Image (cartoon, rainbow, N blue to C red; front, top):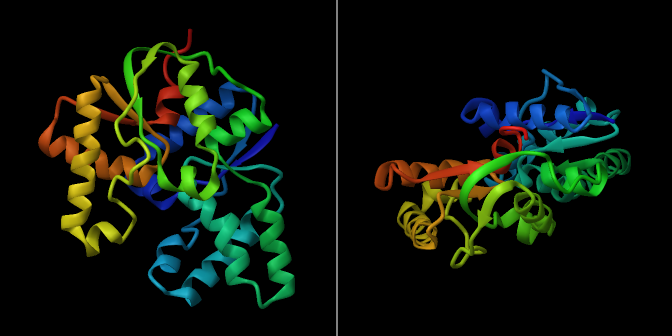
Length: 241
């Protein structure tokens, strides 16, 4: 199956290992993976900041680049949500572009969703010794409603014991520019999240959103350097058994 990899800005600039792991994982699962080097930001940051004209330009650019791809896979639920939900809204006054946005949106998948719903894979053949807790990223849980796929894939990793996380579905406090505009609230939220992680006894916190990983990893680095957070792509692309 041919797959086009849609890489978010945060991954491209700050977390390239997530993109590499996504590529490796999809290749190992039998996909022919292509990457459009001309892709740029999906426009989520601009849209959330009220810069709708800039977001509109980026939406049209994205559609032009990806509209001929059969399957578009992204390791970030927030970016998938932007394309699926907000592109049609941005382009609602232009029937031609609305239709193009709608067609592209139906072919965009979050990584774990694609692996289970389209490839039909429940176990990726990887192993990880230790205990893990899972953080519910807001866009996967509340926006796309696909967080169940990630949890099922994690539970299929050999040697990994999944332990419950207190308030797993509470926000980590990132929220894009929210963490910059309201740093005190953001830090309180991420502190509560990491306190729950530490109390769980887990060795690693697994999550599915690059923004959450930046926020939680940053707090752990400053306050609990012995603890680790990991994107699900890195976990599933790990050592094969």
